[in-house]
Length: 210
Image 1 (cartoon, rainbow, N blue to C red):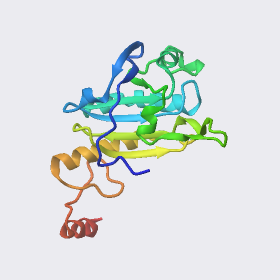
Image 2 (image 1 turned 60 degrees about the vertical axis):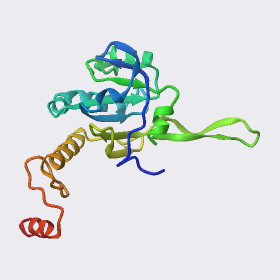
Image 3 (image 1 turned 135 degrees about the horizontal axis):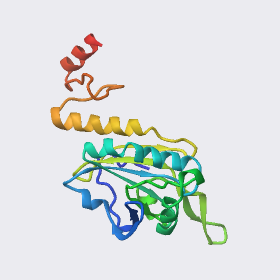
Image 4 (image 1 turned 45 degrees about the vertical axis):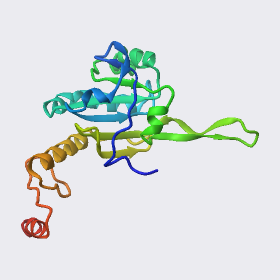
């Protein structure tokens, strides 16, 4: 499947749980266009094992995203009622109580499919019956979407591989640095380090000093 980077993020309207307890009917990323960048990430399922560590890690760093004017939004193939129950379950019981950013319900799996993270696909068997090949859940996909609604960065992990939230923040910083200064960010760049001009001379100067 072709990448979404450089393209408009797929549009959707779905039910979601916001602020840890409120179910909304028509949640959409379009509300952020012209206002905020968005880190939109998928995870396989509620009430599992790696997933709560990721959702809680994003909550722990939520202030870092907010001070960069970035919205964090999660999504899985569970229902809004499953999200609500998980959000109201204590951490010591495997829950994610305290998570405040929106969690989108993708029970139909259409959002996961449109973002290219569904871990399988629908097909027909030899008798013409509809079957699903693979796992009917989302891979651990993450998309950095700018204020214009364009995907600028994406990463997709297999189901057992948890993500690094600091890396998501680093990519936000790199995007903002490029937008502000027009400089590109080399390998292992982080906020406060030297970037470089996207010219032969700029690259040569950077490499000579590093």
